Length: 157
Image 1 (cartoon, rainbow, N blue to C red):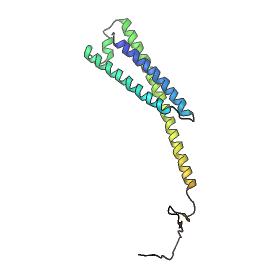
Image 2 (image 1 turned 60 degrees about the vertical axis):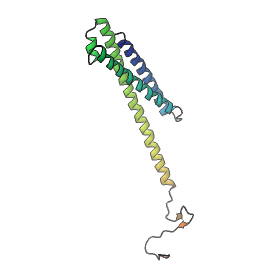
Image 3 (image 1 turned 60 degrees about the horizontal axis):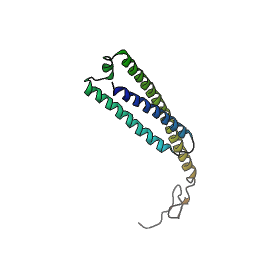
């Protein structure tokens, strides 16, 4: 238990930091200036990797040290005080994981909305900048005179 409880406390602290970073990311997404958003997202990804590594280490430790497949099997053999401490930490972790997932969903929806808005703006600008008339100058600087219907074709074959 001397390694399990500190591992769970590290996970809880990391999840609190993750939630804080996600709230900061939300504020940056709402803000019109996107300074720092990339650094924030990089920090979130690194923190998620650390949390996953901590969970994998704990699972491996339980399998090797106690020869059990889950933490619940291990704590069932412990006294009531240790069991209540660990189950309390697990409840806090699960609650915070849910809050982090909800915030991540909100942030992802907002980022997708920004993408769609930018795409629509680019399409709008492109549609308004594109010449409406068929007669306009080409890349070579020659006036393109496209006529509709029958015409005389001249030139070399």
